[in-house]
Structure formats: structure tokens, C-alpha cells
Amino acid sequence: MIRGVLLPVITPFDDQVRLDEQMLRQLVDFHIEAGVQGLFVLGSTGQGPAMSVEERKQAAAVALDQAKKRVPVVIHVGTADAWSTTDLAEHAAAHGADAVAIVPPYYYSDHTEFEIMAHYRAVHRAVALPIYIYENPKYSGISIAPNFAVRMKEQIPALKGIKVAYGQGALLEYVRLLPDVSVFTGNADLFGLVPFGLAGMINPPTSFVPELCVALFDALDRKDYPRAVEAQKRVDAAARIVAARLRKYGRVPLQEVHRMRGLAVKRFPKWDTEQMPKDEIAKLERELREAGILGQ
Image (tube, rainbow, N blue to C red; front, side, top):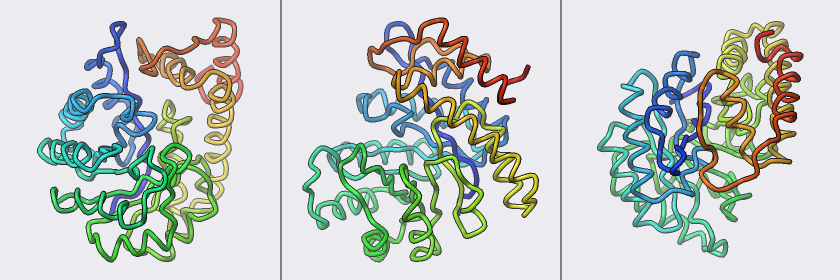
């Protein structure tokens, strides 16, 4: 079972809106060198649903090649149809992925439980990889609640992980009902969860400070709670400051905070979006420095 910090890797693009392969390689190294326990590639923050199947294959191949088995890599392969999802899963398996994550088949939010189960079974039949449920009803329109996840596990033994993207309410219920499944939160709060069996975090707003998240998880894993309290405060501050900008500017603040770490991301997200004014970027950086998130 994978445990720890699996921060989502942003997928960078160039000025022609093509995958920036060299920057993606730098981002993979950035995370691994910070000590993360794994990588989560091509989810929502990784822009997977906004990319073509061929673009996703290209990005997955680059990330897996650069990771070179230094840490486990989970490739998100979810699409609205089982055939494209299976195609992406087979590609991920062929290139050495350690697991695949699958969001429920989105857009058709009235899918029956049978249809959702069939979507996951198709991948299970096609590849011999662990499967992670990507529980993200905000974007998929479908929720796989804990009891449904138990029924899925009965039919799909390869189900080994769940990322719960939003909300904390059901997290410990997944942990209780699925003891052999790694349950990850999409939020930044680990302090009250890891001691009760949560596997770790996959949190987009803190993806630019992986070392802080690793310090938090490691302190909790060692039961060094005084150190964990201080680490949680820093992680919370990073998440709060960035999330405030995400609500106003969409995903482009993630581009800016990665640039502040010396990663020259040319374009993120993929789609056209409002850029942050220079004074707002300066204010963001100042707040992060004053909070001790970035070096003074």
C-alpha cells in the first residue's frame, strides 16, 4: 500500500499550448527531490480531462520515464467512456505506472451503479495494476460513497486506493470500511487523520511546497506531535494563501507559485485564462514570505 505525500504534478504547456516536456521533467525531479512518497499525474490539477488521449499518453510517458521508479507513480486515466479509459490504462501499464486512478465516467451524472461498476471493471480486466478511485463529485457529478466503494472492492480486488478530493466527512468511514485500501485526502489537513489510518494527502494548493507536506507527514508518522503541529500550521498557511487566489483567478496562481520556486512554467492551465496582475503576484509572494512559506 502506498502511503505519504502524493502531491499532484501540474502539467506545463509551452506558448503553442503543447506539452512542455522539459519542464514536466523538472517538475517530476522537483517533487522527488523534496522527498515525496509518490506522484499523482494527470488528475484535475494535472489537466488530464482537458487533454486529448494522445496528449495524455505523451505526458504519462514523460513523467514515468523521468521518475525512473524512484517513487511510485499513479497515473489518472479517467475519461467519460470506458474505451478511452482502458486505452490510457494499458498505455500507463506498458510504461511502468505503479497504479492508475479513475474518476467515475463524468458528464452523464445519472449513470447507474451497474454502469459505474462496469466502467471500473473494464480497466480491471485490461491491466494488472492497482486501481485508485478518484472521488471528485464536484467535477464528475458522481459520488462513490463508502458503502458503494465496499461493493466495488468485492467485485474489483485490484481496488487499492481512493483519493477523496473534497470534504473530510467520509474520510474515516472509507478507512474503517476498507482497511486494505489507501485513503488519501485532497485537503491539506493531516493532523487529525493520519493517526487514525489515513494514508496521506494529494493536495493541489500545496503542490509548490512538497517539502513542507513531507515534513508534516513524516512528523505524524513518527508520532512527533509537537513538530507535526508546527508543520501543519505552515501547510495550512500555504494552502489558505494560495486557495484564496484560486477562487479569484482560477488555476493560474499555481503557475505563479511554481515560478516563485524557480520553475519557469510558461503556461498553466492549458486553457485561456486571466493572468494575475503584477501587483497581485507581488502581494502573493510577499504573503508567502511573511508566513515563512518561501525563504526571506
